Length: 262
Image 1: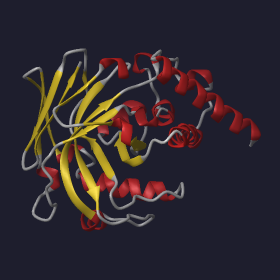
Image 2: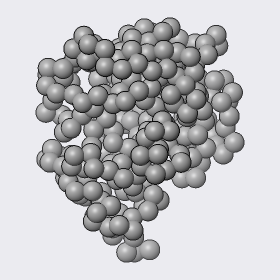
Image 3: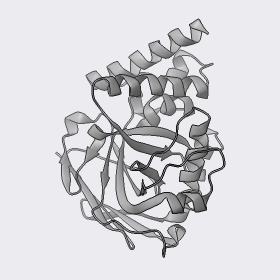
Image 4: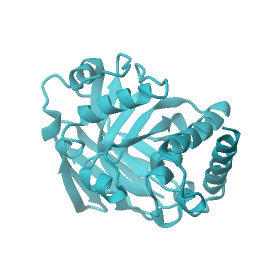
């Protein structure tokens, strides 16, 4: 057990230094080919706790690998998750200094904001809808401390599911009358259409993703709490971002959300 603990701290230190110095590191899976998913989540939690100790607040969770294509690419059969911190939030129509990111990509997602706790292990889609205060359009700026995004599942999990920043749209919409799987989205970069998607791209329904998360977190003694923001998963492929790029996503029913890199 002690050997595993030392490895966890070593990997956590490696990723923290990469983030601090903005210098990507080689994959953890190349440093230790036997690193497990369980160990990777322990690494993630060490660095989240370190940030919490400096005053950052956990404001929600993000779900990654919700598309079957990405799961197949990484050879897995379920999503992963990471933590959202208050310092990761960028205001809608705001600007994000490029010096704060390393190798960013932008995804468009549907965000859930909870009004009730969700506690696994038997959370259903209906439970999610009943616990949701509202949904909103969102952009997630994913980033990786692993060089060239050369990641396996354990690498991205340890790296807080390749989290960077996120943006929420202004419009708050109740879930009562919406078929979440049919909510369409168009993602633009500098005014040009990059891709399109719909809620069904996230495991068939974004609420399915949130239910999965609540049940997965039960394994680690963690619950989803009222007031938390849940990014439910990308509706299309992530798009590379460079300085001065402007990203905008338009959603049916949910309105627009945008961010500029400066």
